[in-house]
Each structure stands twice: as structure tokens, then as C-alpha cells.
Amino acid sequence: MFRLLQARGWAGDALELQARQLVFKGLAQADPALLAASEVAEVLALAQAACGPRLQPDAIAEVPQLLLAGIAGGQYAYCNRAGHSLGYEVLDGTHTQGPDVLSLSRLKSEVHSIELFTDGYMSCPAGTSVRDWGDEFFRVEAQDFHKCGTFAGVKGSTSTQFSDDRSVLTVHFH
Image (cartoon, one colour):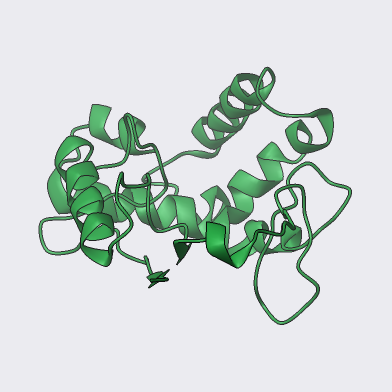
């Protein structure tokens, strides 16, 4: 959506805001003056075809509906959903489950730090301090401000706001 609107002459914060709204609220909510029904259909078909080599069949079938519903209306159906390739883990008070849940044991003497971080970070730092995490965030901001390149994501930054829904807790053991 960002690139499509950019090609139409949208720029700056207005571009970022409009692209975010389309991603978050979904293409079904798009103003027909912004995206005609035929353009929405074309975007859905292109996205589904582009996802073909990347996603499993159960996910490919969901692409059009997910884009129409947006993050707000589509993503949450896959929280802690086992047995579907779009299932992902969420700490939300229910049973956390999914393909990336990993249980492991370590000797206390082998553990030097524990870092818990949210998906607001687009990459991990080399160090383990909160400052390292902050520095990494700003490195990413400098390299890919709109989150359409190396750090592709759904939330780019604007001239007044970062795409900042990040949290980190770092515990160091001495």
C-alpha cells in the first residue's frame, strides 16, 4: 500500500498515515476515491500470487480475507492457534501455543542474562543492555524509516512519531 500510494504522488506523513490505515483497518474499509473496487481486487490477486512461494496452502487461501479485514479484523484469529500455519504465540492469559514456543532448561551458572522483548523491535542488538536495544532501534530507524526495505513491517515512522510499540526487559545475573 505504501508503494502504491507513493506512486500516486502521496508523500510524507500523509502517505505514512494513509498506508497505515489501509493495513490496519483493511482494504474493505478503503475509500473508493482512494482505491476503486477493481484496484482492491487487483491488489488482492497480486498479494495472493506473491505469497504463493512463501506461505503454506492454508495461509495462501486466507490472504485476500486478511487483507480485506486488515490487522484489526484479521490477525487476532490466529493468536495461540495450533494447527494453522498462521498461528502465532501470544501472552494473553490463555494457553500460549504455536510453532515458535520453545521450552528449555539451562544451568543457572550458564545464564548471564534474560531478555524479554516485544515485536516492536525489527532486529536484535549485539549487546544485552537496554541502551543496546535503544541504539539498535535508532539504527533501524536511520536505515529504513518507512519499514519498506530491509526491515519491512506494517508500521513506518512519521516526522513526529516512531513506529514504537516496543518493550524490553533485560535481567543480568552476576
